[in-house]
Each structure stands twice: as C-alpha cells, then as structure tokens.
Image 1: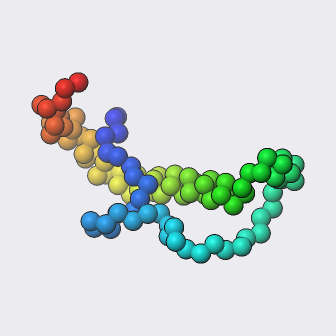
Image 2: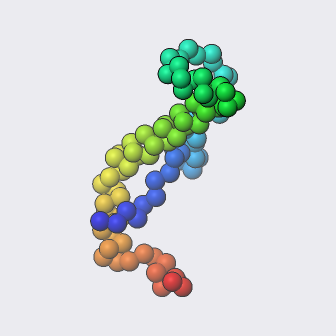
Image 3: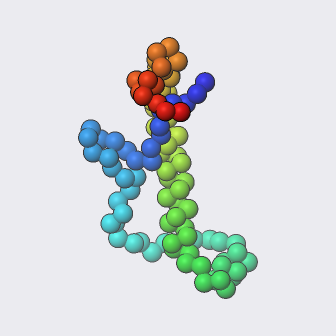
Length: 97
C-alpha cells in the first residue's frame, strides 16, 4: 500500500513544531570506548570526533523518533491512505503532472 502521509523528524505539540532535542544544551564530557585503529586513523585525518558522533546520534535519534511516530500513527495513516485510494487527493484536479 502506498504511504501518503509524511513522517517528520520533529515532534508536534499543537501548532508548535519542536525539534528532537535541545540544540542549546551545554556540552557534556563523555568517556567512550572505540576501536583503537579506527580512532588512530580518524585522528590522523583530523576528523572531529565530537561533531561526527553528534551527527551520527542526531541521525539515529531522528530515525527512531520517525519509526515511533509512524507506529503511533499507523491507524491514522491507514485511514488516510484508504480515503485517498477511494476519493483521491483534494488537489488532484489541479495537478499538472
């Protein structure tokens, strides 16, 4: 079945779209265990570990929140998809493609 409803990587609270986490929160020092060879090669290329990890964690958080949202809204998405299958989309008559 087609998936017509969009999945956003933000949480919605009424009319306000909230991001997944507080971008202004202070940084917190953290200890990690990494593969030593991976760490050595990363440092040799001057890859910023903190920025790279934050980017990876943001992507993983967005992926999980998106899946959670889709699961929580599965019935509504199915109902909307059924409506579109039966009635078409409200803007179908205006489409140029």
